Length: 254
Image (cartoon, rainbow, N blue to C red; front, side, top):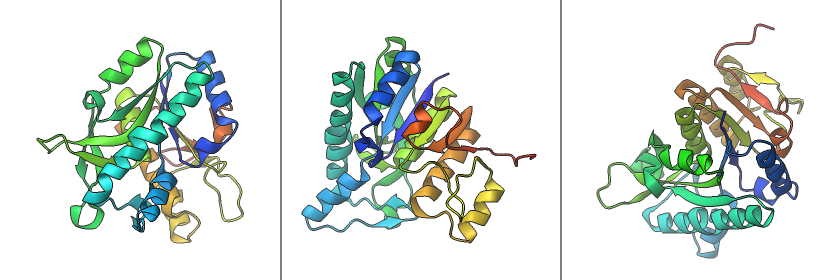
């Protein structure tokens, strides 16, 4: 089974990440692909240019002026930095974006509120399947093609949403790697398994908010689209198959 790993921007600076990915790839070559974010780097560059980042429920507002900047960071510097580190560690990584090969088609969520921020509407996994069959490790920027554009315009897709769409299309395992052990309860203890009813309560009391809401929503979307399993966890969850929080569409019987 293919594992689609989404790496948050902060996780990419974890000193254990590259070695852990190398070991995982070595044990299961041809069964792993990565989707990465880079939100902090985008925000930093926006501020250097005098633009203040804006978000709604953990999703970035992307103006027309910022779209080229997002492309430059996600499909450029962030992607190639990760690819370079993996290749240096002996992993045959190849960097692509959701625009390449028509991999991810997307549509705008709400232009008046989010600008050039989109949601995935289609996935053509041919490119990824070809790379995996040749034992390359795909490293994917979540910038997607605007499915309604005749000029090849791009949309900024949340990395969790892009990874979820890929996991559904590939009927694989989705692993959302963050800088936390999983979804935490009000006492900062990891929740082993989480269903939609439990999430409603955690959101209502403020335990879960912002970026974690986006991850959980993406995880449930992946399961609905055909993903076999979804976990949210830290870098440790790459090597420990029991680590993190498992998402389930049905309530636990325990």
